[in-house]
Image 1 (tube, rainbow, N blue to C red):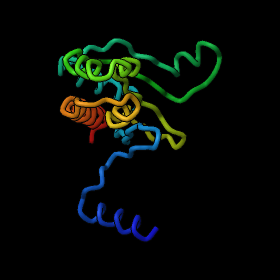
Image 2: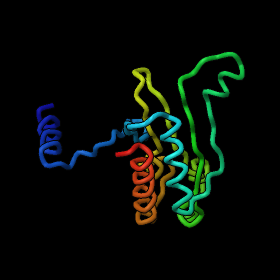
Image 3: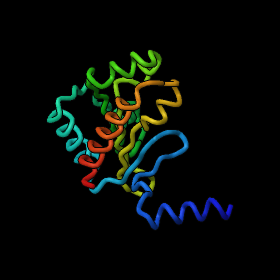
Image 4: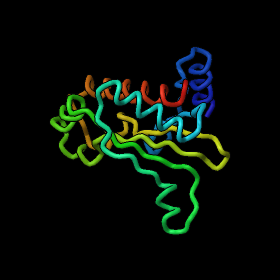
Length: 153
């Protein structure tokens, strides 16, 4: 335990600790400075300005309301770019189940808006992707940039 604590202290002191959190479930999350609606609008703009296709916007709060139930603001954007996704599927065809990419914007139980997406490292492990490290790095950088832009970080 002492070695783990020392290692974490080292990461924090050297600035190597990533500001987003990566949960064990493979999801990267960061806090937004805006409402769910504004964060979603900012994400949509960033995606379209960078040539990505938005395939679907899913408003889970609206869906819940349609059946008489309540849910805090929760939106998923499904988007992609064949130039980035196709090479991944060429490396590991079953990664197609996780493509196109998705980004979740939701209000948590404390009223804080969060932005989350699947970590490309998680997808690499989940699907046994080999030989596509450069492509995964591109996807990782793009997702991080889009999430930060949407969240105002």
